[in-house]
Length: 116
Image (cartoon, rainbow, N blue to C red):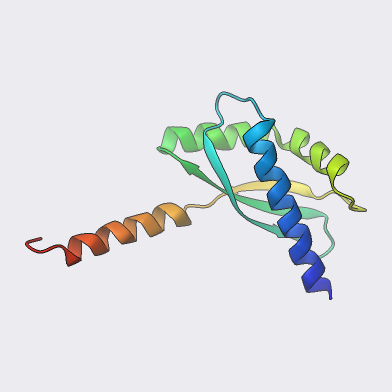
């Protein structure tokens, strides 16, 4: 039962943070950020929020800095909008898996292309 509840909490946090990033945060450093996954500890005291940023290294650095500075705001938002006994400490982490997948797709296209 604990696993299903944790999955629901992860999904709720993912949805709330995604919506918050799109509609509420107005930091100019924040680029096109997508929440890819949330991993909450079993005791709900901490949550790793994995994000992907569309852009180059400068956009990644700016977006991650914006997320770090907005961490308290995001946590307070979650405290107000989710009915949890404990609001987890948030840790934003970069997720480069989408970039990696795009790079692999590009390499596969080059291999399949005639005359490459």
